[in-house]
Length: 528
Image 1 (tube, rainbow, N blue to C red):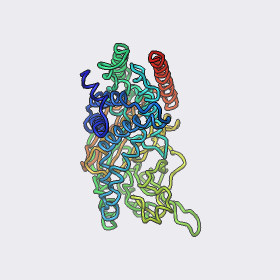
Image 2: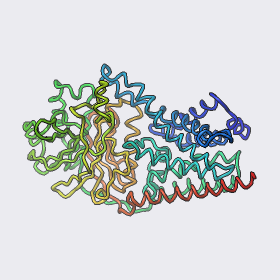
Image 3: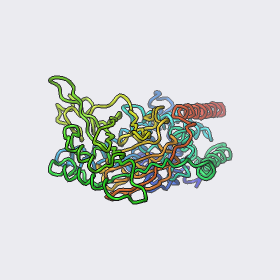
Image 4: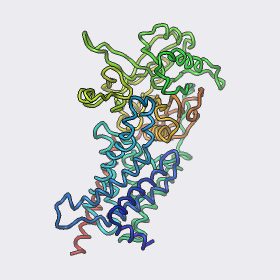
C-alpha cells in the first residue's frame, strides 16, 4: 500500500485528473440510497495523496503555485457532484420539448460549478500543507469552510454535503444535534482522510487514534441518545399523510385538475388505518392544482370531507394583488383549512429554487427565450420570513416547503417553540432516482438537528413521520399511492439551537486550522 500511495502522489496529466474524478465518484456510494459510508475513506485517502503530489512551480506566482491542487479538488468535486446529482436532468425531461436543451447544464454544468468549492478547499489546504497529521487538520478545516460557502453563496445549495455520507442511519446522526451539519463536515473529512496516514506522513499514531476516537464518539453518543436519553412523549395528535403519486407531466393539465383534486379528497376521507381518525391531514406541495381562493366550490368540497374539528394542511399556489396594471404575485404556499372550509392561515416559501421557481437576471434570460421550469408570469415571489402555522387545537408547525429542508439556517429561532417541522414537497420532478431519497435523508437529519419531529408529505414519496431522533415512525415508499395515519411524536428539549451549532462549527474550524498552521510552520523549519 505504501507503493500505491507513492504512485498516486506521482501521477500526472490525465491519469492524475482521472484518479481524482474516480475518487469523488466512488464517494457517491456513501450517499442515499446506497449508504455505504466506508466509500468516503477511499475517496478522501486518495484525495490526500493526490494533494501531497500537487506541488506547483516554486518560482511561479501565488495562484499558479496553487493551481495543481485546485485542479485536483475540482476534478474530485466534479466526480462527486456529477455522480450524485445526475438525476436533476429528469426535471428537464418532464417537458422535454421546451427544456431538453438544458439537460447538459443540469447534469454537467451544475456539478462543474459546485466542484469549484472543492477546488477552493484543496487549494486552501495545500497553502498550509505539511507532511504529517497536520495536513489532515487543514484539509478538514478547508472543506468545512468550502461547505459553509456552498450553503450561503448565490442563494446556497448544500445538497449532499460530505457530512450526510457520514450519517446513513439514525445511530450515526445524533451528534448533529450538538455541532450541526457544518461541524459534522469538518469531523467527517478528518476521519475519512485518516487512512492516508497509514503509509505517508508523521503523526500516524496520533492521527489514527484521534480519528478512531471521533468515530467511536459518534457511534457511542448515538447509542446513548437512542437507548438511554428519555424518549419524548407522544402528542396524542394523529396525522394523516396523503401521497397521491400524481405524474408530473399530467399534474398541471387543465383536463386533469378536477380528478387530481378529487383523488386527494378521496384519500383524505378514507377510513382510518388505526383506531383513531386523523386530527390533521397533510397534502403535498402544490397539491391543490388551481388557485384555491378563486374556487370557492373547492373550499366547500373540503368542508364536506372534513369533520368540524379536523384540519387540512395543503400545498397550493397563492396569489396576491400587486396593484393596478401589474401582474399578480404568486407564492408557493401552504394553507391550513378547517372543517368548515375556512382558511385558518397560510405560509409562503422563503427560499426559492433558482431557474426552477424564479429566473435570476430575468430580463436578460427572457430576451434569450429562457423561462423558469415552474414558469408563471414573473415567476414565484419569495416570502420575507417563515410563518408558523398555528392550529385551533393548539399545535403549531414550522413549515419548510420542498428543498428548504436542506438548509440548516432556514430554521429560525421561532421553530423551537413549535411542535414539529412540516415539510411538503413534490419530488415527482426527479422520477424514481436517488434524488427523492437524498432529499428525504437530509430532511430526516433536520429532525435530529433541531430536536423536533418531522411531518413530511410528498407527491410521490417519500412521505413519513419521523421522530426527533431521526427514526421513521411510519411512512410510504416512493411511488406508492395512498395514505398513512401516525401519532405525531413529541419533541426533545431544545438545548442546542442552530446559533450554538454554528459557534461550535467555527470553533472546530479555528482549532483545526490552527493545528494545521502550526504543523505547516514546523514542516518549513524542518525543511530549512
